[in-house]
Length: 398
Picture 1 (spheres, rainbow, N blue to C red):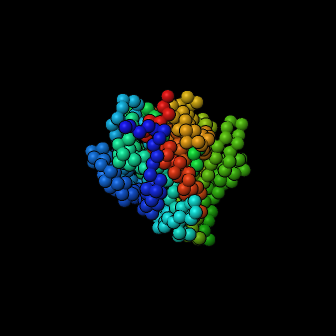
Picture 2: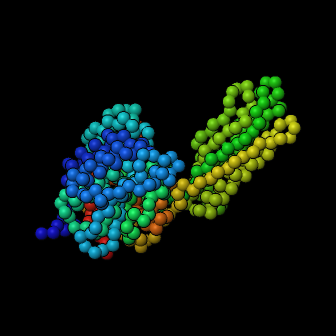
Picture 3: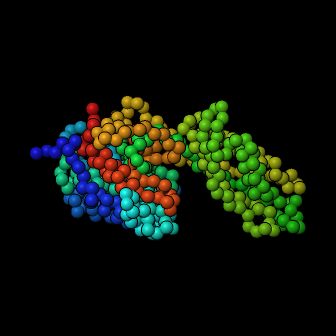
C-alpha cells in the first residue's frame, strides 16, 4: 500500500550518522571533489543510476575555478505534477578543515576547539540527501525532482551563479536548505564586491618624499571621508539603508619607499538595488577625489581603477509564492511555527531566484557558523530532514 506523506518518517539514526560523517569530510570552496564523491557513492548504493547524476561546468566559469562543478540529480516523478528542486551547498569555510564532530547532549560540536564544525552547510546537505535516500530506498511516491549539491557558495555564491540552468529541468517550486531553526527566509539582500587599485608614484621616503605620491595616503583619505559621511558600516540615509565594508588593504613595499600601489577589497549591500548603486557611486567618487588631492611636488596625482562586480541580486518572495506556501504548510504540519525571515546575507536562493526559480530557504539546525563556537542542534536538524522529505514527496501543494 502506498504510504501517505503525512505518515512517512525518516530514519533519524541514519540521518544523524550521515550528517556527522558529512561534517568530518574536508571540502573548502573549490575543493569539493571528495565530499561530492562521497555523496555519489551513497546514491549509487541506494540504487540511483549513474545516468541520473551529472556535474555541470560551474567551476570552469567561476573566478576561483575549482575541482568540480555542481552535482545535479534528476528523478522522474511517480505522478505527473510540477517538478520540485531542493538544493544545499556542500562547501565549507577553511576554518572547518580538520573538524572532529562529536555529540554533546542535544548538540554536535567539534572536538577540536580550533576548528569550526561545518554544520554550515553540511546540515542542509544532510537534510536533502536524507530525503533523496529515503525516496530511493523505500520507493516513496514523489513528483519529478531535482536535487542540487552546490559548490563554491562561501566565495560569493559562485556555484549557483554559474549553474547550468538548462540542466535543472525547469522546476516550478524551489527549496534551498541553509540555516538554523525552521525560519523561512523569503528575502535577502543584494551585494557588490569591489576591487579598488590605487596607483601612486614611488620615491625615496627619506631623501625625496616630495617626489612621491602615496597610494596609502589616497586610500586613507577616501576611507576617512566615507567614515565621516556615514557611508561605512551600517548606512542609513534618506535614500535608503544598507551596509558596506572595506575588508582588505594591501600596499607598499618598504618603510623607506613612498608606496606606489595599494589594493583594497570592499563590499556594499542593500535590499534596494537603486540605493546600492548610489553607495557604489559615493565610494567611487571618494577614491577619485582622494587620488586627485594627493600630489607630488610637480603636481602629479594618483590614479584609481575601480572594478565593481555584482555578487548577487536581492530578492523578496511574494505572499502567494508557491514555494513559500508549500514550505509554510509543511512546517506547520509537523507542529512547528513557520516564521518568514529576511536576511542581510547572501544565499544560493538569490541566484536561484535570479535564474527564474524563486526559492525559499529553510534551516536544518546550524548555529554560530564560521566560528569555533559552531554547533548543530540535533532536534532542529531532524526537523529539517522531516521538512525536506515531505517537500520532496510533494507535501502540502495546493
